[in-house]
Length: 256
Image (cartoon, one colour):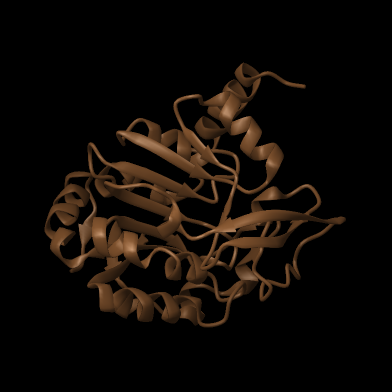
C-alpha cells in the first residue's frame, strides 16, 4: 500500500499540473475569510483541499469514497477528513462510482451518469447533515457532489444562518434538473447573492443563460470543450463589499 508521503507528492504534483483546470481556483483567496474554517465537500483528490490549506485556519474535507478518504488522511495530517457523504438526512445510501473516474461518484438518484463509461461499482456509505457536524466559525464552503448539492444545502441551513460562509457550488442541469434555480430558491431567503466567473469578470446570476453558458454537448468524461460554466459563488449580502474588493484586487471586473 502506498504511503502518505507518496499520495502527498502525487496530489501536490496533480494540483500544480491542474492549477488552471478550474478558473475558480485563482479567486479562492478572495472568497476564503482569513482565520476561518474552510470546508471541502466532495474533496475527491484534494484539488481544492490543497489550496484551502494555505488560506484558512483549518480545513475539513468530506469524502465518502473509503480509499480516497484514507489517502487524504495519509497525505495531509493537518486536514480533518470526514468519511461521509453530506446530505439532508443521516443514514446510509448507495454511492455509485463509474470505473476509472472517481470524480463522478454520486449518491444522487437523479444523476443517471449517462456519459460515464466502464464498470459501475456500488458501495454503501454513511450520510450526515452538515448541521449535525460540530463545527463553528465556518467561513468558506466548496460543494461538488455530482448532483446532490441541493440536499447538502438543505442539510446546512443552520450553519449558513449562523456562520454566513461564502459558498462555491458546482451546479449542473445535466445532473439535476432545476439545480441552479433550486439553489437560488434555497439561498436567497438566507440573504445570499449568486455570481459566476466569466473570464476576467464576476457576473450576477441574473445574466446567466443555461442554453448559452451550460450546453451539455460541451462536456464529456474527458472534460469540457467550448463554453460550459458550472461553478457558482454565493455570497452573504453583508459580505459582498469585502469580497468584491478582494476580487478587484486580483484584477477581476465585478458586476454587482
